[in-house]
Length: 137
Image (tube, rainbow, N blue to C red; front, side, top):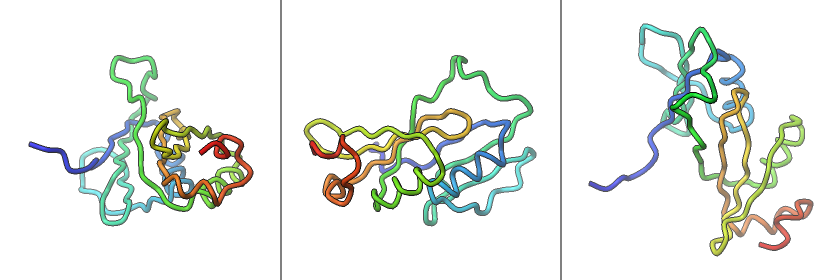
C-alpha cells in the first residue's frame, strides 16, 4: 500500500464558530456538505475535498492530553497575498525555509492553538520583499 494524499484532519473544539471562521477567512477553505451525524460540527473544503472536519464538544480538549496534534500542512500559492491577509487580520505567523529545498513554510495557529503550516514554492520568495527570512532563500 502507498499513501496518495492527506484526506482530512479531524479537530475537536468547543469554539466551532471561531474555528470555522478562521479556516474560511484566513485559509480560504469553504464550508460545505456534512453528513447528518448525531453531533454538531462542520466540514471545510479545499476544492472538492473536505480537508478539515470540525467536531463540536462541550468542553475544550486539554492541550496537554495524550492525543495531541503537532501540526498539519497544506500546499499553497500566493505567498505575498497570504502574508498581507495575515497582517490585515493581526494574525501572528512565523516563516521558515526548509533547508536544502527552499520550500517556504508559513506557520500559523488556529483559535484553539493548533499549529498549521502552509508550504509555498521557493520561487514565490521573489514576490515578497518585506520578510527578512526570505532574503536568504
